[in-house]
Length: 292
View (cartoon, rainbow, N blue to C red):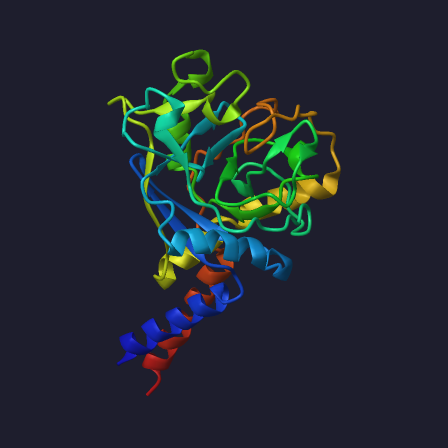
């Protein structure tokens, strides 16, 4: 009986700690899994970005898509392309974009978050006319360093609590398909300049993406982004000068210029508040059992 009550209290604590936070989405890839906490600051103006990603996730649009850009210490980008083969395709004709819903309206800076390590932003179309803040659809990128120069255009809407798998993907060999005339991407196409390839010669595929429903996993993910959100907010408030990034013609529309790598090498722990509350509940249960 006591154990059942204790378990119920823990679940209540977890539910209270995560009820104000957006969903957690898990991406299963051929290199391992990583979670993404949507709207970690619980800003209502980010609901459009949450709904946008979830319609692709819940519609299974990311299944068998591939991670197309692992750009140095800059970004890891995905969610844009399918391929007819697991190995790098011979020509660009063998790739096709993920079918897109209506673009989401950009909200750069409104969440109080900067494009710093572990944060996630929508990829945007760009060109000679500049970056289209309201052009984001299925493609997104995970920041690998201090990319604060992107804050004016790119909306931070999520964060990754554990960068282990991201780091492993970044460590893979990369192919610059734009240097291959037979591929046909053309020079300057950033979508195909840093394609990660596994040791078996295959591309890194997203096997599936889904909304996490396990309460403990959600609590762990939400707690894991606390330090990332704090660092991101502090970076935005500091107003420190960031490197100027050159606009490009791919989804991200920016070069790989950035500051040095800041990728975490440890797995963040769950929120300290949750741990303290569980400890308090445990103590009260034990005290209650000792009473005559």
